[in-house]
Amino acid sequence: MTSSSDRRSGPRQVPPPQGAAAKPTSAYSRFIPREELGAFASWTPDGFGGAARPHPGVSAPTPEPEAPTAEQIQGHLQQARQDGYQDGYRDGLVALDSFKQSFAQQMTAQIGQLLHSFENQLDELEQQMALAVARTATQLARQVVRSELQANPALVAKVAEEAVNAVLMSARHIRVHVNPQDQALVAEGAAEALQARGARLMASTAIERGGCLIESDAGSIDARIEARWSQAAATLGQDTPWHDAPAQEDRT
Image (cartoon, rainbow, N blue to C red; front, side, top):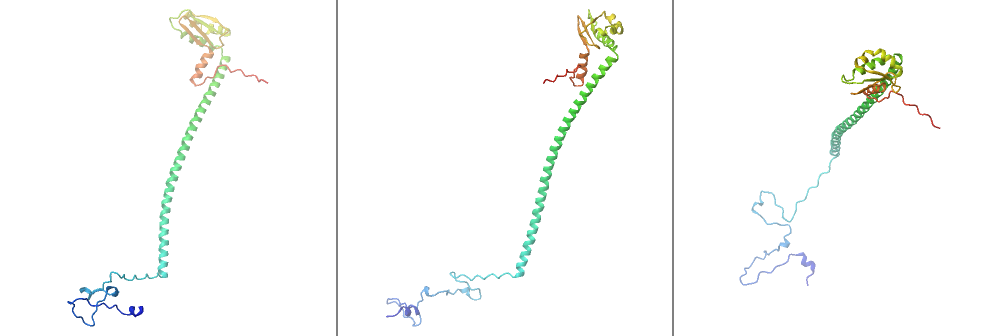
């Protein structure tokens, strides 16, 4: 009985084919199964003078990469630093330009708003100043008129003459109402105008000195000092009354 080691040591013997037609073979020839061929390959006509073709089942060994030297590593590091510096410098310029544009737009918007607000405040201040000047001018004019009436009361005759001449020519029954203290002044200063229109001069305590009220069948003309002053103040955009408002007494 043969051991397993003896069987593995030699090639397996294959008996010759059975049958009468089998031809005798040489003692040195035998059939080798493919399992025992291993890495051998059959010969092809182009095997001579050319590169050897690897067996389809066997892969060529991959050469191991060479380890980089210290100079190569240093060169790579230097190149990486240079590339990083250039990239960072370029990105920094782009960011700076973007910041400049954003800052300029922001400052332009803020300055525009500031100028718009300043213009509005200036317009409002101008209006306030104009109102203050008009108010001051109106009050000053009122004081001047009062002083002039007191210093030259004969001016009422001129006022009465102008008012009588303003009455329609077709008007009849013309009556001129004046303050009792101004009656003599008007009778002397406007005598011609009164006689030409047939007007009657009448004294009335309801009329303040310096003015007059003309009545006729065709209408009336208010030439009282309060009415004339209101018209003059309205032209200045003011509603300052002729008489000062009475001071309110303090109530405890």
